[in-house]
View (cartoon, rainbow, N blue to C red):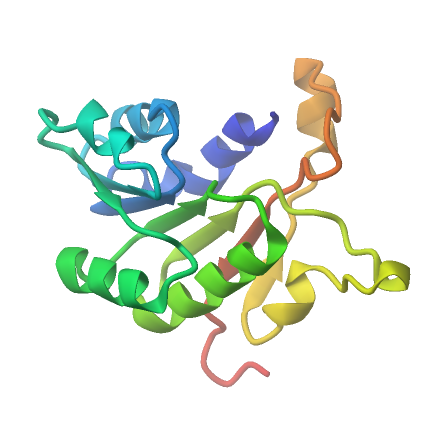
Length: 178
């Protein structure tokens, strides 16, 4: 998917300063390895519902993986209690199920410090006629932007291969806005 070049643009200014990066959804851990390399001064945290993911990084001093469910309030609170609320970047590559994405974002944004960049991958397009208003509707209390990935797709020859090949960037609103 075309996210990697977009991530460079999004995160290049925080590359050296980021101290904590959290990814929801680990699978085989490839993106955690990418984050570890891209953010040389950050500790990389991951969560997944599959406990086997923990073993991949058990000997890595810069990557920690927990068995948590992004849809569980108890798990999200416990996670933030363990790692702290001073997270620089969150990437949701978890279940890809819109209600899970919405819930995780709303829950974590209340628990983590302002200044975080929260990215949701694999966002489905709104379908108002079918009753789905889209993730942006539910996150309207935050600044929500959708980077235009078309130039990246064209430059790197990456086609749209799924209906959810979109990402959104969520930030806390500045004071006095909205």
